[in-house]
Length: 485
Image (cartoon, rainbow, N blue to C red; front, side, top):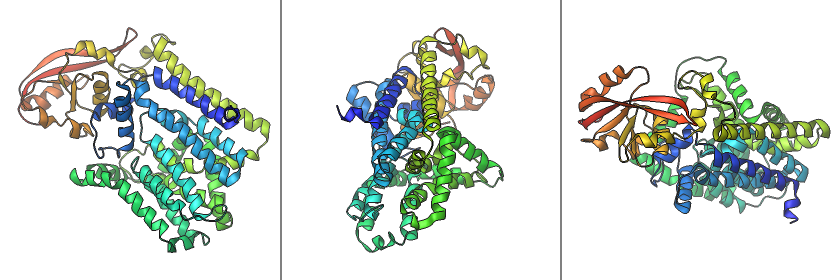
């Protein structure tokens, strides 16, 4: 029981308890529903991301024989505990026990790390755990803060490969590690050893399933992700907006000091090997996505840069040790209470309708409950075995997860994984229930009538929760699909 007496362990257990409540009593979000609905099969990789998060939820479904929110989210809750432990070990090694405690606190009070990545079916949960494992092994290998042990390069290579199997942007942290090896004179001799090069080969071998899958599918996944950095529009204020979004996701009073500490570590340079290493691990994601926002034709999502903030948490934990205890403790406790209150409020709204008729306060079809409620009300409205075609991948995800007995495809330019797991061309000769564009059914008729022998109106589908109508989906029934839309 001495283990449970550790303050850091108590923080992690309390945070995991909150995550389990949130995971079990709220519906899957848009991205989560999409992943579960579109990946009812094992593959070497998938359209949006490599295999790690997809395999985790598939394995949990296979192990427990169901696909409830708690079942598919459970691996990600467990990974949050592993990430907390790895962060504690990394920070303890660099700065000692008190800094390790505050780093763990920062991780578990940050909304994006604690709830989003620590609970939801997203690639960022396994990414965080793998990157923290890499950072710990890398510090051991290069001798920060003590003597180098090159054997740890192989462990770093293993974790690097797992990180790349989680999400492509892991390469940005790994690139920071490579630049650190070049920039730190004390670490540079490691490049003359065989171990770092063997680690690189190991990471590449682990990542090879994603490469083979891309090669077999016309490089769809890599092309999709790389395409987010293309464009010729000038957005001069985009970096500030992106950094503001990142700060809001992490918590401004955690993100701003972390970036300031990173810049200070660069100013001190290799004389501060611990801070210099962490700064290199964190800098590329934080600045690269802000720079891409200057010209990108797509919206930069704020959580893409969070691997950089994750790598800076040991610096933040060490800084927190030097703060005045009373205000520091008050900010930490207040942040924890706000996070728990927000999670429990959402849970209570979903389960008990805490705020009556909340959806009526929003324009039709825009209720926030659509994000956290599973669309299971559709099951009684559609016969099992029906082939359903949505026009947007995220609608297909919500429908597909809510209706495991139906087959869901996407008639549209961005089907994502549905274009591989359920391509429209696979349903030639079938009758298909088409989800029409709300408010403009005529446009859907004109678009898809040439693809069917006939197209007739069908009853609208109603997404409801606790007696309230959240969304009305007009539908059309296409008879005998003649060609792929």
